[in-house]
Length: 393
Image (cartoon, rainbow, N blue to C red; front, side, top):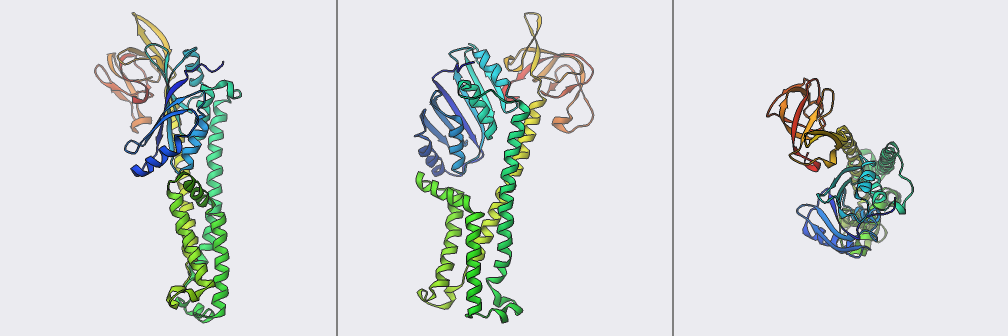
């Protein structure tokens, strides 16, 4: 299949958070020069980036990578477009990438498409392959995609943990040896102003510099990028803070005569190592938590049936779930998962809602009761009227 999308589309990136309007303005400045982006609007209240784009020129993978480079976390990517070719073919291709692509909806005229993908790198790459299959190789299997995403997160987690352990190994002794006069034994070995203490601090300076170079390298890379884009983020703060502490300590060690009194010549290499190590540990924990959350979301998405038995013109038709509209009647038989949220209009059954509510016992449902999509119908048959579809379900 060749690319069959319109030249223009609306791309929306949902971000994990956005602290202030200045951060939104900085992100706008960074994204405006992106090839294919006609207009860029960043809303700091909703933490959304909306781009009117030419899809033939816009590279979604590069776009999301650029956003992540500013320190923002992309949680979801939505694309609204009008197909100039076979819209059903695009929809079928997109559904083949579930759960990386979470939802596909077609408009009433069957020419408009709304595609939602998760914000991780593998999901965005899958979305790009759907929109531009002529630019990519054949799509890999769902299992391969899921494994690739999990492996990427695991590798990043292990990389950060290695940085944490190195930083922690330096930070521990450095915290103690920065103030030896507070400890009776060390006070005698490294008296204040002694040559021994000077040599010790030189060694600490070299060790803490190694922490900055290895454990904190990503902060200084982020600082350089923020300077290029005239913006600031967490990496900027950490790099300036730890770098300043190291430089001050080194000047105090090498040229103490520049300071008005000896009280100002203490070193703060411990601050450099400790702050770097703790922030890296926080980043590692965030990646691990985000990976678990993403996996849980994918499992929940996987629970939803791909098709529904809809009553149209008095006849039951099996259609894809994305084609079902609010208000339509859906028949659910014993042992089937409920495809969409709705209200029972005829029949009765007991519904296993444990995966949603945690309730271990099936709940009796009859006329007028609400049922939840992806829950299990145990024994009865019933007909429901759909109340929510797509992202609302």
